[in-house]
Length: 625
Image 1 (cartoon, rainbow, N blue to C red):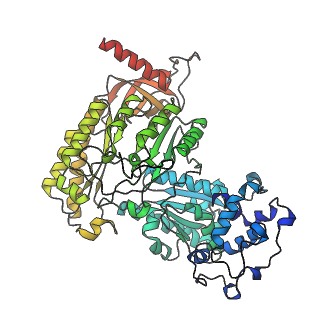
Image 2: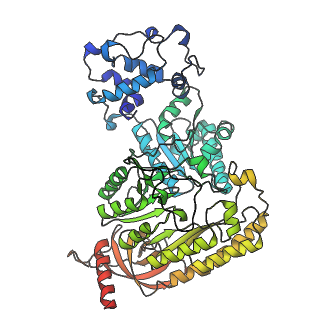
Image 3: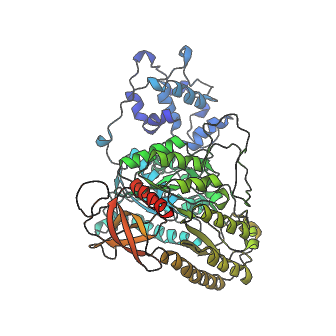
């Protein structure tokens, strides 16, 4: 289908294809379809499932296929479409167009000459994956003619809101924003008259992401406040859905895919001047934890080919990006089997010791450690981080490559969710408290200076005071650098919703959450204090918001925020004189003090990523001798 994309997206472009007149067939529409099928309704006039999909999925596809059939006769001079033979025509068209795509020279209109279809405003809620998804959507819409992005919804003709369904609080925020966007749409004329709105017509409102998939019908029927609902795997369909709305149809596509990874799309970076970026390497989740809605909103796991990831990271390097965060719902479950042949299903797939999985790997390809190996070698001056992993997928080879490669940050997110083995069993996490602690000890043995972060849920179904106390003791035992902590929020369609009762009172959840936060702050404070007196390599990300005129801020290898006074510095290797550090520079900073939530230091010199670690290793070797 990729070879048909230019023609499918711009049917008028087919008339400008550079094809000889001898190949054009002067066919009438009547010769393409039986008389009984002239109605372009969403009924099923034919028994073929492929034919019915033409009507239900893409109402205007028949006209486009008619246009294409005038230029693509199959062998023997017979048209792809033949009266009474529409049964397999859709598949014939795809196969034939793919085979002959090399012959087509489409005279596309340059992007600079296209008329903009409208201005876009966007908001994103939830995880980093949603941010990256929004960048993919902006790329798709740019190619469809929506090129201008505005910072205020009042000035937009198209409003996107990318949603999260993990917790009820996130959904309530989305509903509040939708009410305001509906006001902009409903009161458009008066808003323009009073100067409140500058949009050229009432804005179309589009809901994307996990909440779109979970509450699709409810959102569309909510007083007609939303025009389009599009799930995470259907973003390529957005231009067609918007066209459908113009013709009075419902714009909805929340179908999940077993294949979609958007590997061929170069995202439009929301922060174009940033030196950090997100790169999605896999999508979906197979774990089926009892509290989690993600498998039902994001679908099954599928991974991008390694080559496509390296290509995207290379583009980012050319744009000046110095640090990439690799993303996935289960990022370390990455499994690129696209080039694998003759492999026994599931062979050699190694889990962390003491961990189990409900879903078995069918075919093992290149694993996450293989991807990190290639990326760290290909881009020696770029830092790599990743999130969010699952503790079950930390085999030894992944830990060893993190230790060996200086540009893979020594920071691991290790979601525990709870410190109680009995609650872990109800959550269907696939491990015990003891197995989790054993993994923490192994990680710190292999990577001594690693920073560990985590996720915790307070008040899961049936949680007792003793089980809550187990979580508090786990936090003390591990000593986390950072953690995300939440009170449990029951989600429909999950295993917990079908099998358990949300029986912990809300006031008890909040009290336990407060206790957990207090214990965590004491634990994380010690981790920050341990950095005082060390020299850390900081990637400058920008001015410190608390002192933007005098201080800069960035992150250490372990992910700690560090601020320092912006003064002229020499480079440790390059002979370019003294100058103030700028965004994207690596700076050696001596840590002077800790606030137990951030660090402050003295900048010593500018340097290179590889050079800093070479010198550090040499110094460490000298000390040992």
